[in-house]
Length: 185
Image (cartoon, rainbow, N blue to C red; front, side, top):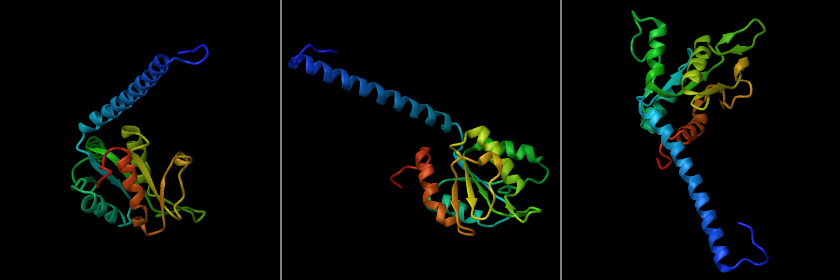
């Protein structure tokens, strides 16, 4: 609304009402977007997938997710994959998981002496990024483990060698950001 000279009280009131309407419309659009995300993820079992190599630190993350946060988890060997194709097991895990934490620990020694994550974890990272998106397939990178090329520039949660507990607050914040965990817990 444009005014000539000083606006009248009615013009000021109309301008304020228009501003409030605009703010309300933006808020409604934002709420509709959040509801769409929530409806999409209601169709899953809301399990948190934990991808890992041989290191047992994944169990600390599992305990944090289950015992502290009260969420369910999924992991490749949670049920025996005996007699089942790896691809079938991965497909099931993709179907039931709404979030993935891929723990990259330096376990594979390269010819140059650098430490890399196990290939299965790198593969799982790509699968979950493709299925649930980059914001929900979170790389947990242990100090000393080299990044692989496709995660350069991607936000990660880094933690000191052997101390995944140092990442727990960041993990909680990501779960809150994605509306998987209530901020009041």
